[in-house]
Image (tube, rainbow, N blue to C red):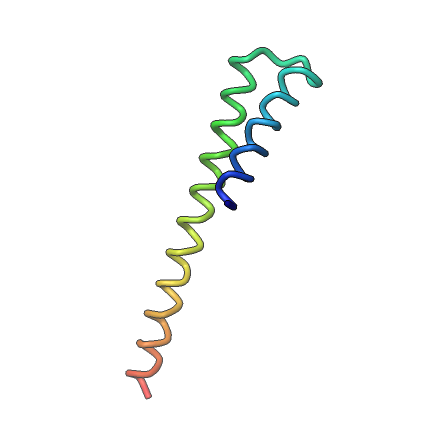
Amino acid sequence: MVRLIVNILIIGFWFLMVKELSLGKGAATILLFIFCFATYIDERLSKLNEKIDKLNDKINELRK
């Protein structure tokens, strides 16, 4: 359900860029791709940071 809402928002955002901002379809697609890629990278980095925090906690426990 959440994925459906996100997809609808992404498509709506694409149409907004094409119609309201008068961008071409190619430019709007590239901007949308950059936005989606940045969101994906942000998610991956947050997961990586969680793993690093867990490892740091284990290291601190071993030092005690």
